[in-house]
Image (cartoon, rainbow over all chains, first blue to last red; front, side, top):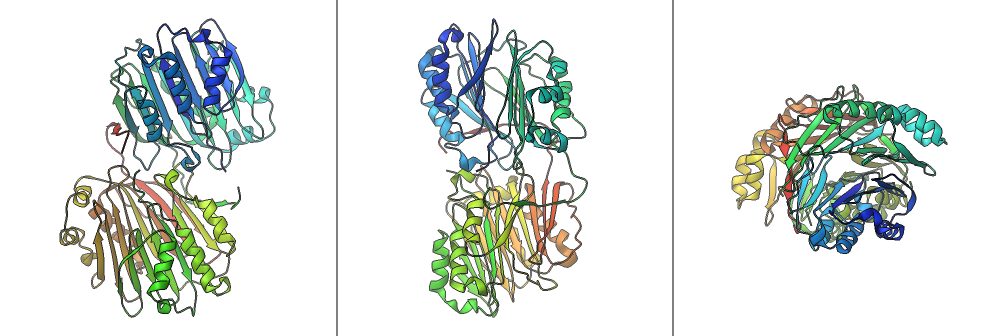
Amino acid sequence: MWFEGAEKKFEIVSKGAQLRKRGLPFWQKTVELAGAKILSSIENEQTLAFLLSESSLFVWDDRMTMITCGRTSLVNAAAFLIDQLGPENVDLVTFERKNEFYPHQQSTDFLKDVQTLQQRYKGKAFRFGPPDEHHLFLFHGEKEFLPEDADCTLEILMYNLEGPARELFMGSQTLERIREIIRMETIFPEFRIDDYLFQPCGYSANAIKDEFYFTIHVTPEEHGSYVSFETNVRLGDRVGDLIRSVLEVFQPRSFDVVYFHPEKELKAIDVPPFIQRNYVRQSLSCGYEVGFSSYYLKSADAVLAVPLEANP
Amino acid sequence: MWFEGAEKKFEIVSKGAQLRKRGLPFWQKTVELAGAKILSSIENEQTLAFLLSESSLFVWDDRMTMITCGRTSLVNAAAFLIDQLGPENVDLVTFERKNEFYPHQQSTDFLKDVQTLQQRYKGKAFRFGPPDEHHLFLFHGEKEFLPEDADCTLEILMYNLEGPARELFMGSQTLERIREIIRMETIFPEFRIDDYLFQPCGYSANAIKDEFYFTIHVTPEEHGSYVSFETNVRLGDRVGDLIRSVLEVFQPRSFDVVYFHPEKELKAIDVPPFIQRNYVRQSLSCGYEVGFSSYYLKSADAVLAVPLEANP
């Protein structure tokens, strides 16, 4: 059984729901429904951030974002939350699934998840990207929603880490050493960080400042090494710079960018020497523009096949 | 439930086994074990070719090749044949699985299949290509084997058919009209063809001449359209020409080439305007060289996301 790095994610906006006041047992139950556990949390005056056994949960007064990897059943947590809040009180639902490395290990596929959601909240489903390549599945509620002007979320999904970056996360490291290498404070100063080193390998970090977060999840396993980086920091023109900084740390062979934003015009982002494989753009009727791009590094020469153990 | 076009394949060489003399019930049982059915057959003095409900089976006196798509369990047929022939009488086993569009619909994954095979026949397993991109899984027996000088197999696996080619296979066509468009007799003259049109869509063809075959399987469904073309015709320098001819007929957006051959030196094949995504080469200890390459066409502009029905 190989570990699935690729994540599922959902976001709910419910104005007036005062989500941060729901208390720990409520969020524990939500997380357990997805098949995960809360490891730790940090909080400031606007944002409550839970580090999970499989990724992260962020809670604000009027919205929440939950991200889980592995074999979690995130849709069950989403269904529970919609039921608890009452669909009539939910202003926005989005639910995403990146195509998995090992979909046969998952308890549901995206279409089954959509059926579960549709029973509670009417919406639309899309596939960003061709079915035989990297692609993102996205469901969103049909209700009209007006995102704030600068409201954006950037996801950088990185695959097949190279050399030093992967070794860093495979060895017996300390959190201090990893923070030293990642040096996120140079990219995002003044964020409070909550991070965790998994055994035998794997690393997760949540970081918050005011209403903003970033989160990092590293799955360094040989077959399907993967890192996700996500933030709601308002980047404006600095999107390309951030992507380049993050790539420099993790050194993937390929990566995807998922970008939610309210602007109508957004150009493809060049990140040489990576080759942009495709660029999918869609205006959602719920008010967001979503861009999905895949990039890869081309090997100069032929490479060898990878030997597999029959009993991994 | 979407139809899985991507195929599994195995080949067995057993000198002196006189496989063509085994009779129809034996091959019916083999095919049924994989969860498929025999639709029709053609035969010449060297080759017996069965068209299956899911792809094809070719039988010669000393070897056989079976290819199945959909949700078939091809490994069960392979295990049955090894058991029936006796592992000590089997000179070569290869077993391949292309990474599937919808692996979660499959009854086994490649590693489980390898375990089934290893219980009968010691061998090695490889992955050609990165786990997050198009890749081919390959198992082969450890026994040394000396392929004949010109013994080669070429597979062209084509994804996301464009415009006219896909429409041809989606509509209510006749076999005559399809043969007219494919015009395989211009590429391979004098082959005897056995073909079949599936309802509501899909097309398969087997063709034989002497000991040579080619076979075509078309899965034109909207989500994951796919065509495979395979032949053991000795192409020499004409490999590139054949690939270009086949691409012209089926007009895919991306394709892979799998090439088994006994030569130590084989260069990557250029097929402009397709971009070669990667090239994996491996010498197998059983005597073959195997090359795996992925190609794609880059869209000039951003494309839209694809709307999905929640109940396909």
